[in-house]
Image 1 (tube, rainbow, N blue to C red):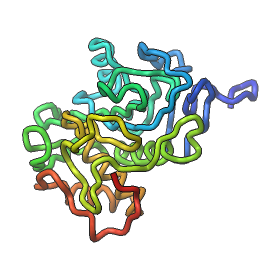
Image 2 (cartoon, rainbow, N blue to C red):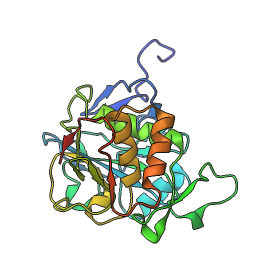
Image 3 (cartoon, one colour):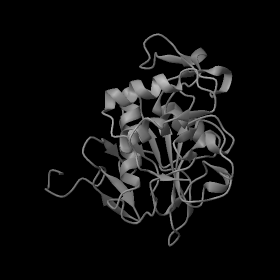
Image 4 (cartoon, helix red, strand yellow):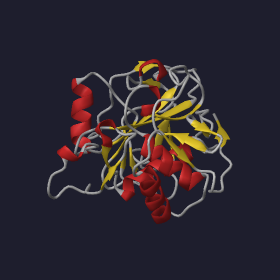
Amino acid sequence: MTAAGAPDETRGFVVAGRVLPAPCGLDVTNFHDPEVHRFTRRDRSGRAVTEVIVHESVTRSAADTVAVLKRRRLGVHLIVAADGRVIQHGDLAHDRLAHAGGHNGPSVGIEVTNPYYPKYLRDGLPWSRVIDARWAHRGRYVLPTPEQAEATSRLVGWLTSPAAEGLSIPRTWIGLDGARLSMGRVEGADHRRPGVYAHHAFGHADGSWLVLYAWLRLEAGLAPCAAYEEAAGRAEGARRVIDLSDLAGGGTVA
């Protein structure tokens, strides 16, 4: 609450001009805060928002992520900082942002700040864990922090829930075929269909590990620490597909 007793409009998610409360465990600051940049956008008012796309930035701070996107005339709705804080840079319903090519129209973009490549690590950074991952570009991958993984999972959970009024994103995992989850390109993913995507699904190299973690949390029901270690262990050395058949789950298959 503000000093006058009114709700703080800088906290929570802006959806179709309304501020909706963030779920427990998510620290969200939106673009009503004068220090938060709102990316250049096109209006998509009245159009259905049916997809969420998970990206990784190949940067070392949320501020650097914003600077790179501005320079490239791109934008995302949500950035997840190293400590798990979420910054909202566009209205989730009304702002069409340039982040995913042909998927821009119906999607919400989540950008997780992560160096991705081990060569970009430096002393003192919050990222330190690297795995061998044949599915990743150049074969080695810097894991997002546990706080980022959990924040991304909670974002996906909220965006695909009835609480996200004004959005219509189903909890359908693009790239999940039966109990096998793709960690790379997904056939047909260039074409729009409702659900949860890793950016990797249509020709890039990011987002797959975070989608795996989100599935382990939201569908298999693992606790955060267990999901993090499970995702790290299963992704280590994997090629393009991870078998999840031994875990309970009932997510919609796509």
